[in-house]
Amino acid sequence: MGPPDLRSPMLEVARPVEPLQSGEQPSAEARQVRVVPWWFPVEEMSQPIVFHLETWVVEEILGSNQSTINELEWLSQALLHVTKLPCGKVTEITIFGRPREQNLLKGFLLSLAVWYKELKVKRAERMQQLEEFLKNHE
Image (cartoon, rainbow, N blue to C red):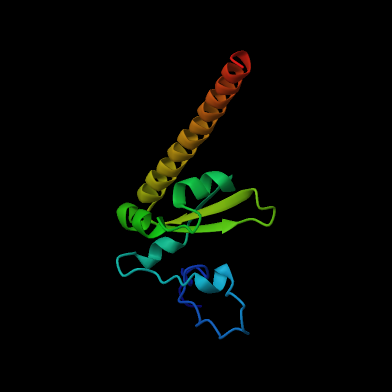
């Protein structure tokens, strides 16, 4: 029996997207070509950290098209895989890498999540105050 295969099926080289019928768009999974970067130690793929965040928070942090993932991966030296769960309200985040980098990236993402939630509450309070002010001064 040989050594275990530590590669993740989520991060292997994707197969080319086949041409679609006229007007159809490729699925998000087909558009997301993920290749393990040259700087990433493949042996660190075996023990990912998995946690869940609300989808709206993930979209605030990473953008609706998840455009900041590459920058986060390069800066943190950890790989990030984001999957929306079927319910649509929760997103699963998987972090691959050395334990230190995994924990740093998880802490960073959770801190941003708390910040965005607090910001949403403050905006709601300000909006309520504005509505009350406008009602009182009509």
